[in-house]
Image (cartoon, rainbow, N blue to C red):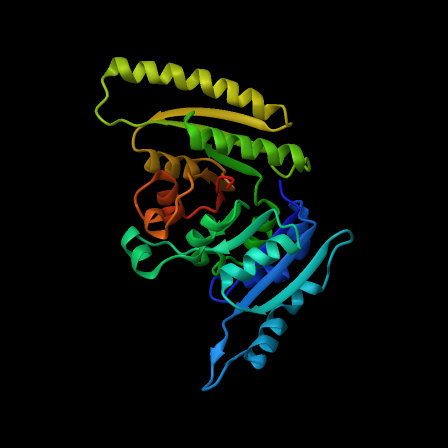
Length: 292
């Protein structure tokens, strides 16, 4: 689904471990892999300075990525000073990046308000998809487990879809990436329609079930045109709970999700399905921000 990735790591998120799995990342369709560690500028009495020792240490930690590079794959290591979001945006343009790997710990909405989130901030500034991996898991995978994870990043996508604007945008983005990068690394999709059970009568629930089946059938046909196996499922209940439960009970590689564009970080911390999935899913999340 993607060819050029930017892997951002602060060395506490576990993503720096991926330097040892370049052949496995390449098998997932990636042809250009760029590792980034950004270092803030520190202040002396007179001027801002770059810690050259810290830069050298970071480059040394990321250097294994440059070994055992398969033919046809380009690997770069960037250790740059500056604000992470600014550096990331610059490298997205420099290397024509089509997916950004970033870590985001599990946090409550209150914790996000207090501590903030570089990932949520980045999602507001770029329409490049984000592949969000949980530091708690990446840091604890064995090498064998992590190798398989790198090979199957997008093998089986769970796509929550309900026919609304964000769902239609998500479906279009997935189709565009399947079309533009036909490498068969995405082999299967599960379209999940959740009927919110907020006090609806049985008659209304039956109506929504029929509507869901009809729209899912059309969406399934669209995706199958890209040589992907597509399953559909309609359930009733709390949307977040049903999404996470479905991911747990199927062999899901990642949950694909999209959200409407918001203007401020405060709005990103208010309740929404996409935000809740970002904060609470242990599964990798492939997140699409709408085009600006």
